[in-house]
Length: 437
Image (cartoon, rainbow, N blue to C red; front, side):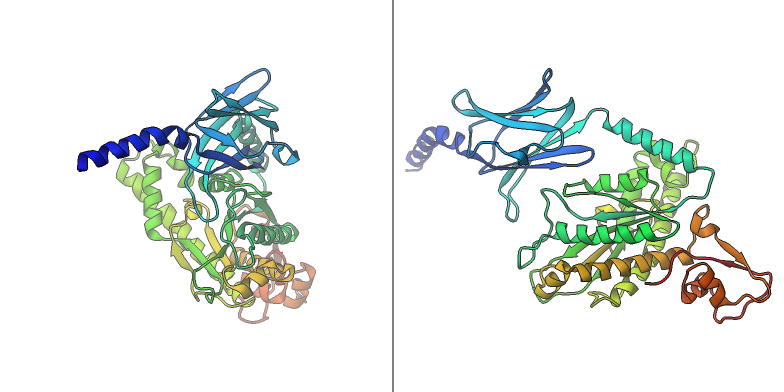
């Protein structure tokens, strides 16, 4: 009986094999153009084998999909983005599908597949990178460093809107996508930082495209960021969950990251203040890395507290203290970093708040106040903010000095740890940037 069953199953597999081989259908195709690469995502009904290669003159990328068919043609302007001029396709060998990407320049192509998740089926992802792009970026960074090396500089605030492109993040009850609302908040925060004397914002993503988690850290470091802020909107199966949260890196996450950089010791000196590690043994190198990570976490926790205090004035917070977790984007060894869950997008009321431009401005404003307060209490040497000082002369008043430099009285007192308004002639006041909003 068992033998008969095995033979029957074998027969079915032989008969069904050709049918199953042609069962993959390529449906929706999405194109995302980022500054450093272009991503193409093919939505496929089932798993499929593929081969990818490039051809010159004219430049094009060819993708052969085994046993696949096409649901609809690739026509329309939505397929002409970034370096892609056109996408075309044709059957190949009667059983397969060939897709050709006509591109404007030579690229380095990478591909990978993703299994079904949430509202997505199987996906084939193609990333196209310009071959000279990395060198251009490196040249820009070197020039930027050399220009500012010997003079006071602005504080650099890296603003990271979570998710993007084919990664929508969490989805709200009304269909609100996390990637959209956090980008709106990030843009409002960018505008506030731009207005702040002595500060400059850097947007990790400037549009609707995805940036890899490690690349988010790298972009912040390439721009010599003094602070990294990643903005998200939480979700939970219970729609009653609500409130904002602020996270810093956990000690466990720090230890894991230190071990990772220790394994790449030729780069480790970048993360311990430029100290050469060539003549240090593994134990000392490990200690230096641990100290660097610990100091960064301590700064992140303090920064997170100021931001959380600001968010408490906007609405409910989920936790009263800064939490710690192993989020990948928080693992920069030398840049204080926090991740902000601005609200629960799975909560209908908070989803409505996230869609409100007024609420978005309030959230961005509370984050800006936290950023300002942190740097007022922790001025970074060599920055414009740390360089502003006022020597008290006879007749000076604290309110008059605050008015002269366009800062709030409270902020001036915080910056100088003053408990009252009494001033001593000849003493020096540090002048913070901006005013409390």
